[in-house]
Length: 614
Image 1 (cartoon, rainbow, N blue to C red):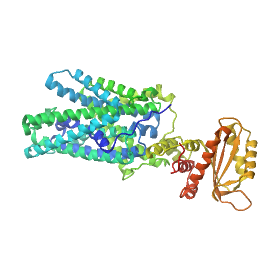
Image 2 (cartoon, helix red, strand yellow):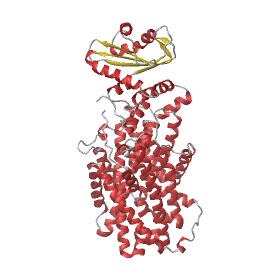
Image 3 (spheres, rainbow, N blue to C red):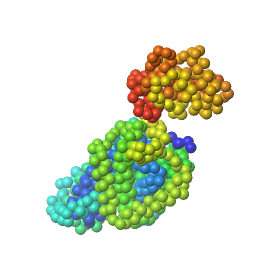
Image 4 (cartoon, rainbow, N blue to C red):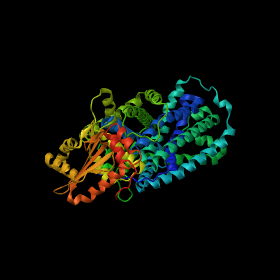
């Protein structure tokens, strides 16, 4: 299946804006009243702890995103690490969570519109859902630019509120500060953590980020720090301004506090800010959720048509439309169920991505090469697995039931569709292979990760790179004579070109007598021409102890056997030029001899800096 290409159009501020816009919404404009009812005046501590928890969790996700900057983010990671079953389940859950979070934001927009116009929530919801779907179909750059403008305005309005609100704080509002111990604070931390789920959304569009090695870590971390500080200070100010009883029952606590501080002007400013926040969250949520479906379609966990892109806009139109429909239907769910469902799934995603880092590192995959590594490994990841598990349980039986329901739905999708079509390797097999000393993999995942590195680094590829990826590599103990090496090597080649092994061996040996091509005292190339049409091959042999070409002691450690039919003579000679160019690379000899396996040898040949043929 041809994989649709997504263009890289999102810069550093785009990543910051998508992550910030996805976080600043109902979590600060609606949830503080519900959170205050649980915790009391210490509610701002819960918001700060939720941000701190988000930071510990997101570090592992950033590591995964810089190693595998692909559409779908955490869904792509889970599928590559745990396999298609869990990948389908988490993919379905993550898509549902992001869709529910977008619905939560659109509910906030509808509430504001209803309070001023009396227009039914369902009508407002349909209008805004359709608008966001249309904007995302029109292009990621337009959606990201729209996000940047809104986030800049939103942060400016919240800073104005903080500046005017601090002088109006009444210290007596903070007593009693902690009335029932730290238990309610921790419960509320898990409850409001949903608002930090936007962090995951920003890695879902990683494939469309320019220079992901730099922009993903900087954009996400700066966004999280900014939003955590804003949330903490805003909830601190609200607590010091509003009467406790009014705060506990308020669905618009920031707007109510704004009215007290700045009169009707303050109320209007905060109402505009809340509308802006809801818009940014809904837009970012649909943008990210659609990439979940795109990723699952690419990996054949869902029908391939879902991952197709618009020929005009180069955006995943089917995935965006399906997501929009689900967002609209979710508007009919109760508000508290929306929050708990989204929170439980987001917590589960953070848990699994931290576990994924442990498996990838311990699996010792050669091509797992993140440009950013989470610190304090493995203690940070183990802590996150335990703490996120605790918060899922603390959300209550209803949240667990919702999570189990989504797990069942994902399992059904996998059982009746993905199970019959998905046969790829995953990192857990590599870890089991290492632990059990049994051969369970065929380097399929290593090849996938190599392709991701090529895309991430912007390395141009030509026909020779494709030839190497398909080439057989033999690692010999040696020392051995060239005659024996050729006789052993042509057995596999004969199947590829449909020729008798003895005839192939004879041609190579005859050709050697006519022209022994030694590029250096380290490497050699043998080339023959075949009859027929459409045939070409490359066989690579490494011998650390050397291949003897004469009676003298030879130092040939790398042998390349090249051949093909006459109409392919041009690419054959170009392949010879490429081999020479690779061998002349600085440190080639050292890397060739120290490479631990076939994967590292292929990396040496395909990821090197050489002139490519167009």
